[in-house]
Image 1 (cartoon, one colour):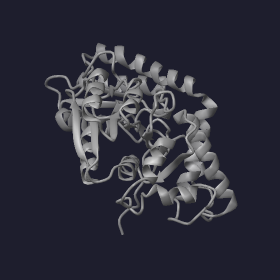
Image 2 (cartoon, one colour):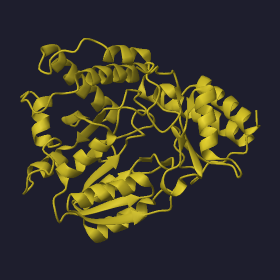
Image 3 (cartoon, rainbow, N blue to C red):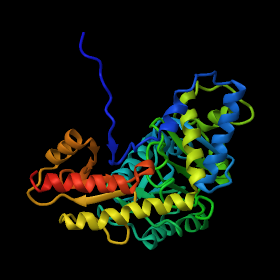
Image 4 (tube, rainbow, N blue to C red):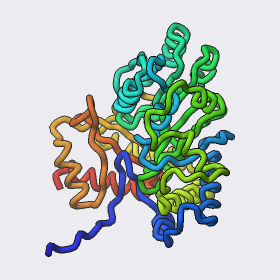
Length: 370
């Protein structure tokens, strides 16, 4: 028999997952109870309440989908899009492109507003397209994980509503790291993931739908394409009816409850400032090493730092040495940035001065040939 696998203690500075605090891991290790146990049902209610605070919304339909962030993406699309619907999507990276794939699988007529990778999409361009196209749904990525780009969205909800459209945002990387204002921005549907700035293990996808989105979902002519992700049924388990749909990932809900408790104990504004401060410490340190940010100045995400790999430096060699010699994980580029960029995550519990200092020292030693 081979030796048992020993899990190392890493410093997770990639695009996710982020470091998970011990208190969250301890919550996950609590005794498993039934998915209709009164104690668990109370915990579900508290998770919904805390998610509303983090999303900054009053939406009744706010819950955690059983699945990762990609399940969150698929959930909102399959519930809101029917065959033949016109959908407008902003694309400036991998995850905007993934939205188009999911929407097409729902039978949508997909139209895009595109920008170069690393560039944000001008809101005026999206608004012009909304007025010309009159789509049912407008979707955009708030924090593009593949490029480290922060997308302005504050004017898009009003423009969508003026044209009778729903407005959807992907906030997988932004939720808990920078401000996400679902109600103030007029967002009708949003989804995220637990393993980024919430610092919970991967496995759940927080989603929230406005009353307008719920009305659209209930007015569908055809059944939702996915039985498992049909919110008409899932909401009856998370709501007061408690109708059985599927067995919830009970211990993951324990972990999310503890992670959200930690987020709100810290306070959202203080948490956002901690992410910003870690980013501001990293930037000059990278500059001293001759490393520049990729993408549009003024639109860099604090929690996902996409930087150019210096000329003559092998991507995989550096990342492997960081992992093997220093137990530090960072991410490589995706798509157009594959082999050209590193993605340095400062998310949730990973966003600390200590981690930034450790990383800069380790990277500096490797680049210096030591």
